Length: 245
Image (cartoon, rainbow, N blue to C red; front, side, top):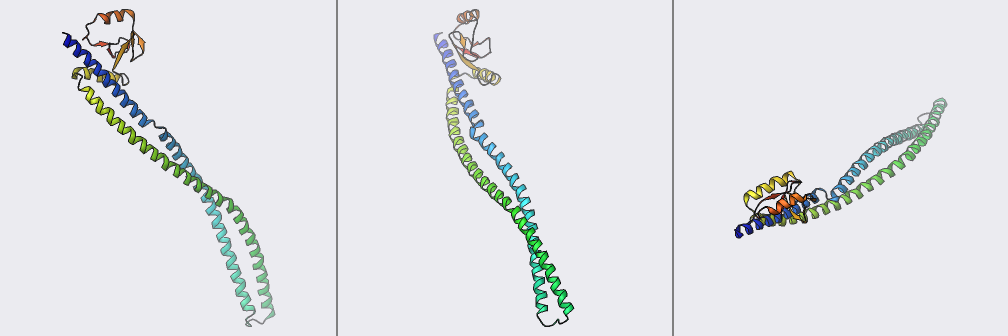
């Protein structure tokens, strides 16, 4: 009889060891999911997307201004080329009529006035473009900084994952070894309770308190449990977990 009692007690003690390893495994898996670096990386990636959107918007405005500037410069260059052509004809000796020469001189003056206006407009576009260029450069630097921070976070996450997976493997191996000392029927009951009760299927009864739900059992229930044979499988009337005396 004493051998049966000792076997029952050793099985329940082994079950608590299994529970300890299961709790450790659950905690390690929780650490994997809730690693602070993951939320930091998520926030950083959100910031990266925001910076990319800002850069695209500013770059679009910058390119539009640059396009206007390039168009003005091309028009100025074409106008200067036209003046050069007229000058070449005026001084080639091919044109001698004063009326025609006067018309050419008038055209040159008109073109020069237009060039002056175009140059003023080009300067305005340059002034408009300069802060946009600076903003794009600043956003590019910010993007590079965020990319560097992201690499560091990913490296930290990978290192933490490797360490946690190593601990998980150790806990799972120890759990499997402890489970060998628990009868299959008892282990199956424990697994069902553990699934239903937030990961804890067995708990010790200490000083009249179930350490699973942390509630003290009524005096009448404690008296009843004391009268139960040592090999009897007991359950907490408060939470339903297996109790180990």
